[in-house]
Amino acid sequence: MTKYPAVVPSSVVEAMAPPRRRSMFRLIRSGLRSLSCAVASVLLACGTVVGTASAAHASGTLLHCEGYFSTTYSPPLTNTPRQTKVTFHNDLDYCPVGGVTSGDASGEFTAVRGCTTLDLPPHPATTTFQWNTGVSSTISFSTSTVDRLADGTTVVTSYGTVTTGFDQGAQAVHTAVQPQLDPLACAGSGVASVSGPEQLEFLG
Image 1 (tube, rainbow, N blue to C red):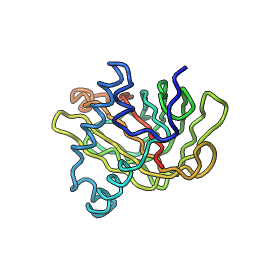
Image 2: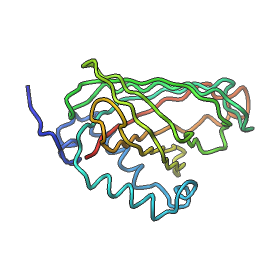
Image 3: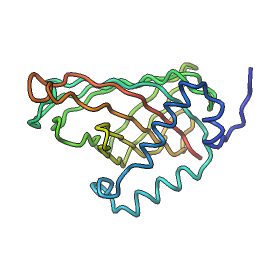
Image 4: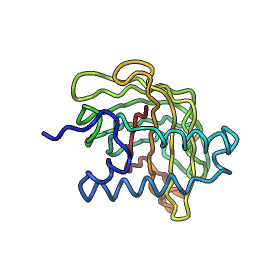
């Protein structure tokens, strides 16, 4: 079994991933570079968010996991924003760094959602990831940036801290790439679910 050092640079994480995972890693990284300051200013001044992100990526990687998220909406998303129950599941099935190999988290919340609104997560928010080793990490997310890119996809990046459990005290950065919504469904019966690639990193 290959052993990795406790702190691994992001470039090494990408290099040792299989081809399919490297492609997803590059997709998420590209989305991060495309985040606009105009959207980031929804919660914080642009300079503050960019500074936080830069500081995070300058740190070493304590844990790196990739996988896919799924989200359901009840009632489905339409072009008219309305109160919606949002149920999510995070399935991290590839963790090359950090001492675990997989993990998952689930939860739900109610918020105003629609096809024409940016999908900004509610904050503060707490999510607990259960790892394959039997331990867990509870993350308190305080800030998110959301950007709808030119190709129609939406990149949601959330920043927080591991408050209890595995890697307590580490910075947490979760990135999800949501697909472009079907405009015909948005104008009709609605979009009941979405899924896409995601990445979670603990930085220290």
